[in-house]
Amino acid sequence: MATLLSSPPSPCCETKTAALRGRIIDDPGAMESLVPAWRRLVERCAWRNPCYEPEFLIPLLKHRSDASARLLVVEATRANGDVSEVYGVMPLVKQPFYRLPIHCVHAWRPDEAFDATPLLDPDYANEALAAILTSLSASGARLLAFDTVSAAPEFDQCLRSTAAQNRLSTFSRDRFTRAAVEPDGDAEAYLRQSMSKNRRKKARKLLTKLQREGDVAFQHSGGADDLHQWAHQFVDLEASGWKGREGTALACQSESLAFFLEMVDRFGQQDSIRFGRLTLDGAPIAMLVDLHSGGHVSGYKTTYDERFAEFSPGFLLELQNVHWLHESGCTVCDSCTDPNNALINSFYAQRLPFQSIVIGLQTKMNWAVTTLLPLMQSGARLAKRGTGKARDD
Image (tube, rainbow, N blue to C red; front, side, top):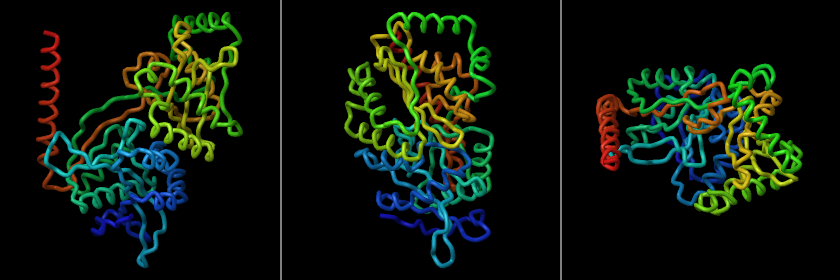
């Protein structure tokens, strides 16, 4: 069912031809009908986020039985009621914030996703974001929380200026960076600059040592390859390791498996997904999955055969991937890893800034956002430190 949030758009939410308005969609059929316009937005959006593209988000919403998320779409509605185009997309979920008795919504970022940056039209980013804030306020929400959104200057400025224009306050909960590759020149020159001499020497020794075990090959999927076969090979390899033993592998959870296979199929139809693998005598001992969105690549998942851990096959495959990234013509690859991933940080030379931020959706929430939330976060951190110290004692 689709429900139009009928509050009037704010003055900053008008284009030359139509007003931007937010519409909540929770019907899968309606989402599917939106895909053509959604994809046009993806192709021109200001900040790429594969997690909010239809190929990723529709399967995720479809197969997560616990998902209460809904899709907020910003559209241009003309005087006659016709929708001309889509200007913004963001999935939302209602969740409490610090257990406050306040209606709070979050940009949905479940475990399967790595980014919560909304898709916004580059020419109307402020207007689309303002329409999102206006629509949510009209629906009764008082806070909008983002966990892991871009902190790149352009997006950060858009977020903060839009809030300021509507006299709304923001609270920055956290800022961090993720390792990234911005290809420049050739891969060997890049790795010489980003990796220490000792680590490069170690990588060569590991590869030579592995080659003594049998026939070693690095392989990369192409648009004409059977991605279904690559996907199942990845799933099987992941299930053979610690994730399989702990029950967190894709193969252990029917919903996660269904999401992954459909996501691969949909991205494959767009030629926007690539698998890589390191094989020993034809059998994969390390694999990775990259999502491509324009010139932006996201390192979505990796796995390796633990029986060959002494050869660091995952590390060797990641090094080879740097070569593939340079050959692909991409402008940037987000590692999508933990900020403290020492291995990736050691040879991914660039860093992408991210943040977690909360926006008050009404002016009467400004005091809570600027004063109460920081105090509550400080208290929570002190309590966490105290608990850790008590355990140490």
